[in-house]
Image (cartoon, rainbow, N blue to C red; front, side, top):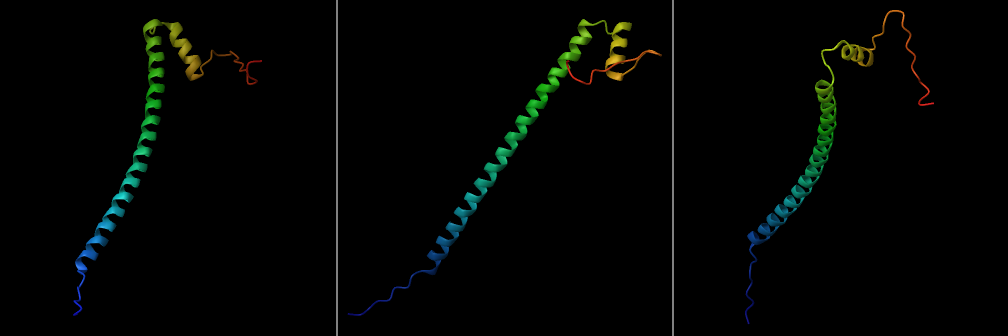
Amino acid sequence: MEEVKVRKKRGSFLLKVAIFVFAVFLVVMLVVQGTSIGAKRAELAALEKEIEEQRLVNDGLRYELENEAAGSDEYAERIARRELGYVYPGERVFYNVGGNN
């Protein structure tokens, strides 16, 4: 009997290596995209929280504008005292630094 030598095709080995490398590449890309999506979701949640806080501030300001006499002297005095720290000449302002005692 004669022995027939069968040459294995070198191309099939290279094809298998190429498919394996491509599969590894896809897995790595999926992992990277997953972490990126997680980071973007966390960023979105933080921005939504910030938007909600700003809406509360806006609602408070809207309430002051609608329900307070915005053009009145009392309103202007209250804003000057509370937000700008203004006082009358000779007036002493005491702050409770100890808390609610």
